[in-house]
Image (cartoon, rainbow, N blue to C red; front, side, top):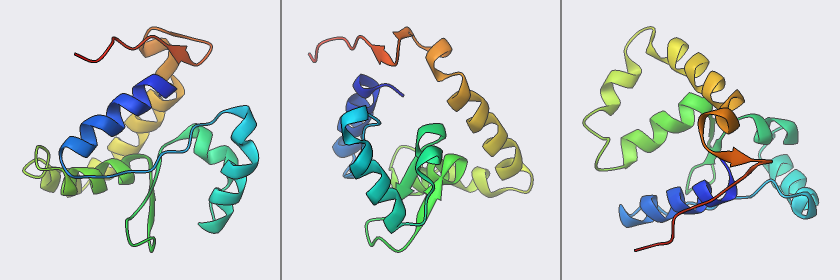
Length: 122
């Protein structure tokens, strides 16, 4: 996701009562990114490859499809859909699909050099 998409997603999640803290992968914040990752035992490079979610109690870290499943359990619009994400085989397929989308994210949305335009808020 580019910065504009991240801000937009964070705003949407906040509407449903889910407050999240996001760290952008900007070069000038690389030191902060590395120190934040180290606190949770995450390799900094992995932060650039897939989404990581630290739970509000700061006791658990989920990544990729696991982070998506955690959000699905906590967002009112997705809570009915969440049990399907735990069926046998779904996590295996879901993680592979997630990683494919993550690797191709800049080709899937109209972004150039990691930056995309975001329509103004209404």
